Each structure stands twice: as structure tokens, then as C-alpha cells.
Amino acid sequence: MSHSHIIKDFERVSPDIVAKAASFQPAILSDVNGRRGALNGRIKALRPHMKLAGPAFTVEVRPGDNLMIHTALALAKPGDVLVIDGKGDQTCALMGTIMMHVAKARGLAGVIVDAAVRDSLDIEAMDFPVFSVGTNPNGPTKEVAGRVGYPISCGGVTVRPGDFITADADGVMCVERESIASLLEAAQRKVDAEASRISGILNGQLNASWLTKSLITAGVLKEGDTL
Image (cartoon, rainbow, N blue to C red; front, side, top):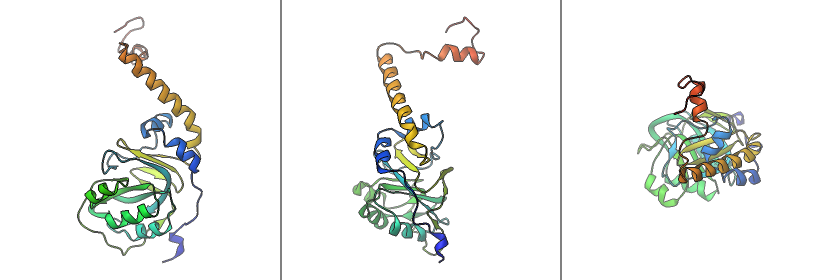
């Protein structure tokens, strides 16, 4: 296989930025990123408590073949998130217990796979974060070339090597490596604003301050009207 299929070295979002950004829910980062970057909801946490954050280590495979995932496991660095374009295929599992043990032993932050996995109870017992489009007991083949370290499409979102990946029970979020640091202040403001709003709700302020104005803009109410 030509080495043109593999890019080993690329710039990653820094560990410092990963640590800071990991404190924010994917939902918060999506809001301050223009509601962009969330992978399709078909890619879900294998178990609701699972969450992760780290730089993307990207893999593209042909449906049902995991040769390049084995290759990626040999090359990924501690803290990386394996992000796999499996073409949304659910006819077989691309990864199971053995590969997840390798990923965990190599210090990876977790796995995002736009395809199915298997051995879900074993993975749960390992407490290793895995996000997939579900499970299937069928095993894959290991015969077809793909690519490692190239930009991929995963869950309908472009993911480049080194981009920031974060995921929790709501789903998976990708932010471009160059952009994530600039979102952190806005993310904190969003967290503070939401905490203030919830506090107001608990104190009886149930209607959102913007609602009447938006209804007037939408033509539901006339200027001067109230609910």
C-alpha cells in the first residue's frame, strides 16, 4: 500500500485548549459556533454517561472494512479521538472489544464511528467512550485500502485531522482547530446567561424576555400587543 494513503503528522488542537474547551457541553459550543459542527444524531453515545474531548485522528474506510482502523490504532497518539467515516453502514461492526482495548491502552480519548460496533456490554464494562450508529454482531473484513489523516465526512460534517472533538449524551461536536480557542469566552458567557435564565425561571420569571418582540417580528402579534 502506498504511503499516500496515510498522513502521520498534522497539527493538533493543543492540550491546554482541549482541557479548557472540554469543560463546556457540546450544546454550548454549538450555540456559540453558529449552530454548526454537530454530527448527525445517528451517531450516539454507546451509553448515556459516556463523554470525551480531544483532537481528531481521522480515518476513512470502505463500508464494512476496518483495515485502516487497525492502521490508525498503530499511529494515533495519547489523547487523540479516533474519528471514523464508516459511511453510516450498520450491516456489520467495524470495532469490538479487542480494538477498544488497544485504543484504551494507547491512551486514546475515545472513538467516534459513523458505523456500527459490537461487544457493547464489554465496552461498557471497560468504561471507554464510544459513539456509533448502533451495534451489529457481524464482524468486518480487513482487505480494502482507505485513508488515515485526511479530512473526512463524519455524520455529515467535515472533520479534519487535529480539529477539536467533544461528545456527550447529546451527541458529537466538531470545531475547527483554528477556531476553538476564540469560542471559549463566548461559551462561558453562554453558560452564565443560561444559569441566570434558569435562576429567573425558578423565581417565577417564566416568559422569555425576547418572546414578544420575536412574535411581533414574525407577524404573530401587532406592535404594542402583548401575550
